Length: 172
Image (cartoon, rainbow, N blue to C red; front, side, top):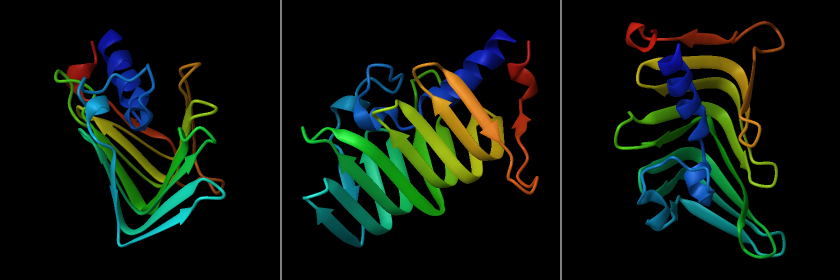
């Protein structure tokens, strides 16, 4: 059970953290030292409200971290630090290699939000999270990084029920 718990925790802990260089990051050591690159078909910079929106084949990349979505919005605080990152797509895709010893974490959902102020990651609609053969699916997943608390939910109509697949090698 220990290996499963470690795989599942690593799977969730990686989401969006490298983007913001939070101290909890378990990503490849040089990810945080890599340039933060964003590209898309169009960009809108709302300086007054501290928002930059990238639309059309939007891609955010920093080292092994890649986020692909229809739209990626970055909200900045008054001190120009990243306050939140929102990726919206059909679905939006996230991937990152947490360490040289671990496989790539990949996630997809129609909406993925990292909230720096609350230190949370939320994914909604058609959520799929995968690493090293372990897969979690559902309608909504909310991860409080401070409390290390995961709350996963099915859809309101009972669709997209929570499903967890654990590969035999991970069960001890």
